[in-house]
Amino acid sequence: MEILVTRPLPDAVLNKLGAAHDVTLRESTEPLDRDEMLAALTGFDAVLPTLGDAFSREVFEAAGDIRCKLLANFGVGYNHIDVAAAKAHGVAVSNTPGAVTDATADIAMTLILMTARRAGEGERIVRAGQWEGWGPMQMLGQHVTGKTLGVIGMGRIGQAIAKRCHHGFGMDVIFYNRSPKKVGFPARQRERLEDVAALADFLVVAVPGGAETHHLIGREVFSSMPDHAIFVNISRGDVVDEAELIAALQAGDIGGAGLDVYENEPEVPEALRAMENVTLLPHLGTATLEVRTAMGMLAVDNILSFFAEGKLVNSV
Image 1 (cartoon, one colour):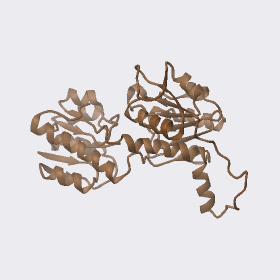
Image 2 (cartoon, rainbow, N blue to C red; image 1 turned 60 degrees about the vertical axis):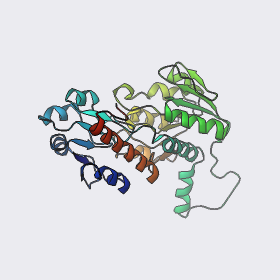
Image 3 (cartoon, rainbow, N blue to C red; image 1 turned 30 degrees about the horizontal axis):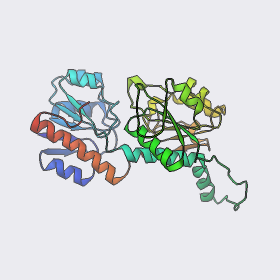
Image 4 (cartoon, rainbow, N blue to C red; image 1 turned 90 degrees about the vertical axis):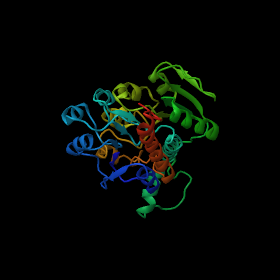
């Protein structure tokens, strides 16, 4: 089979896929444009796409005679693919859950700690040569240990974050989940997003992207948070109404934010970049060689299983 890989991936991933099928590697790190997506659907048996490769309903309808039978997405999130449209045109879709859990939870902890302890601001002061030496009242931040963590979305990643906070930092855990969820550590479920937001010192959103969660977090959630509370997003950028987040920060309705994802990546609003109480990372959630290799291997396993046995390891 002829397989298109839309971005550079670790050598081990490409070697495994190349041993079984003919692989075309696209060297660009930019998302596919519309013409490239049309060519991918009509010219290959399968495509290994990733974030930003926007296979929309319009693209599927414009493609005409579609040769592609599988989009083996690199990543657990697949809101850039219209899955219903894909399936309507005979194209299966898979993703790579599990491989990303711990790395994404680690980034959530990084953002909690950096924002609470003003680490980004402090580093900028040191790099600018503006540090005047230690003092008892220098750059006082928020204590993390023993505080209350609120989690929106108690799936694999939400639970991994909660475990780190509870067992590692002695934090109380409350959470919102669309359905009842039992977890193997102390945590209290609330029925409303706002109820979790009102009690949290740190509020982390860990839900999937897509139409059902678009702007799930907005004015009502931010207005419910204590004015010292820190908001963290490691899910998808469009889960949060970015304009309302900026308004809440500018008004002092919340204490700060730690963000790894943005509503219109790679664009980050100047208003966010100007705020010292906001930690900004360039979508680093899974950015380790080990994790990216594991993600790629799982995407390849989906391709190999699909063409050899007619089934997917991780169907969506």
